[in-house]
Structures are given as structure tokens and as C-alpha cells.
Length: 403
Image (tube, rainbow, N blue to C red; front, side):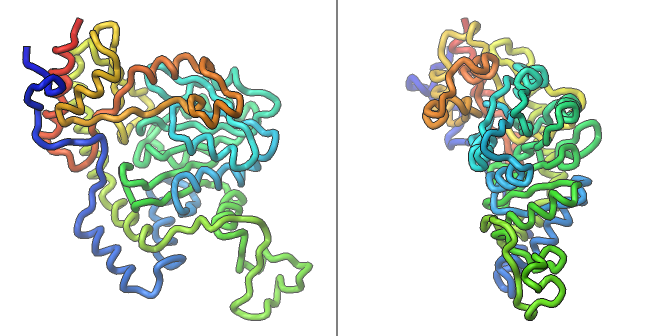
């Protein structure tokens, strides 16, 4: 048996490959340079160009570009009216922002369990968590796969809940032929560097509700408006402002504006979305073919409704067939210069949430899955040799620790 690099063997590759990486080309650089040489570095024309493109891609009527994905979630919760005493149901198997945004508004997150094969929010568990205090649901499109949107939307409709789709992972994904971004009351996106499309940072909220759209725009910019129709008539300025400089703060908002630098980069990247999506799907298909006959590895199930643009590829270790822990397996892969990650630690495991009174045991399926999952490398610029390196490393480590 070949000796693992962890124990002094030769790794499958000389240089490390990580779970995610951004891709920037010459066109992206030109787009950013054009802004740097223009009259607007922020709050300029690139913002509306990006918003229009997002609407074209998703079918949503309105898009609001915003500072980052977390700010997008905060904005969505705020305009949904989340306040002290309200509950919002979400999944624990996600990044902290999916629940923190509820706390920002004074509400309390309630964690529903996951489907243990897709790792997305379980509609059955969601239904069990609804109470008279529930105001909204934040369903996370885990790893790029759409949540079970039809069932979740039906529950929200029956209970009078606002449906927020956290699409940070799923730009380009379609559910029953409809793009993510047009499926929920509001959908949030992230453009962090490991996402399919990046702006360095950046986010967006999409909706087809005009009233939500107006509130989102105000929230993004300090609650300030230059729109005469939105100004307070008690100031006497609603029809005849003092001059072109005049504006009013009519609510309390944040400085969550996106720069034109970010918007130009994201807009350029969106022109490559089809290419990005196709390559990610091809890599996932190669993984599926290579790992299908390896019972030590459990692959995620893709629901037939979701035409998924995979942001992550999360495998699960069948520890009953391996003579090692997840930690040992992780370290062995890293020693082969194939560096995985874990997405995610259940949110209520975090010390901050423990202090708020959340306890382990809330979501048994999510906790079971967490103990076994690994995110293996997946990004657009991976070469076929890179993909083969990942497969060889998995085969080598599995073979070494196979029962």
C-alpha cells in the first residue's frame, strides 16, 4: 500500500490546491480600469448597469446592489419588518450571516433541521418550527443547489411568512426552469471571491415587489432620498425643494452602498456566468463518475427540480467504512496537497449562540452531517490535471484507511 504523505510518503501533487479560487481575466481588469479613470468611483452608472443585468439574468423586476452578502441579508430582514420578538426560521448548516441578520434586527433565529441527503432546509422540519411569533423564513441554497422552493413557498403562503432565499451560493442555478432570484419574496446574492462570480466583495437583493424595492434602496443609503414623491410633506419640500442639492432622510438606514469599482468587476464577470457554470458542472460530473463506486464516500443528492451551478462540492465520509476520524482524513488530504474545507459548523455550536441559550442537539441531522462532511476543490480555473489530483488523493486516503 502506498504510504501517505502524512506519514512520510510522496504527495500526489507538488503544489497545494485549495477548495476555492477566484478567476479574473483581462476583460475584468479593463472594466475596473475604466472605472478608475472615470468620474465615478462610487454611486455612479455602473451600479444601475449591474442591477439591470441581474434582473435580466434572474427574471426579477428589481435588483439592489449592496456592499456585501451579509448587508444584503440584513437589508432583506429589515424591509421584511423583523423586529424585537419576531422569529425567523433558517438552517444551522450555513455561514453565520444567514442567522446574524435576524439578530441585527432584534429578532431571534430558529433553527430547523436539514434534509440529510441534500443538506438544504427540510420543509418538514420547517413546518414543525412555525409558531405565532414566526415572521419569515431564510432558506439557504446550500453549495449552489436550490432549496426545496415549492414546498417552502407553500408553507410561507399558508402561514403568512416572508420568504427570503439566501442565494449566496446559487447564482445561475435554476429551479423548475426558473432562475434563482425570481423565486422568493426576496433573494440575496454574494460576490465574495470564492463565489461563482466575484467583485472582491459585494452583494445584491432581488425582488419583484415594488414596495420592498423602494425600502431596500432607502436602507442601502442612510434612509436618504432625493425622490420628491418620498419626501415628507410636513417639510413643505415635497413639491418644491430648495434646489438640486436638496435631499431628506426619511428613515434610518446604513451606508451599504457598493462602489462602481466592484460593480464593474461583477458586471464583467456576469458575462462569463455561462462559462463558469458549465465548467463547474463538468468538474462535478467528473467527481460523480470517479467516486460513485467508492462506498466510503457519500455524494450529495441533487433534487431533479434544481439545475445546479455548484459553488461547493461537499462530500460526506462514511466513517463506518473508514478506520479514521474526519480530522485525520482532512489532514491526510492536506498532506497530499489537496486542501479541503468544512462547510459548515452548525451555527448554534458557536460560543455567541450558546450564550444566547441555544444548545447542541437542536438539529440532529445537521449535527450528524457536520461530523462527516468535507468540501473538496471546485472552481472554474481548475484544470483536468487538478481534478484528477483531487480524485487520486481521495482514492489514496480512502484506500489507506479502508476498513
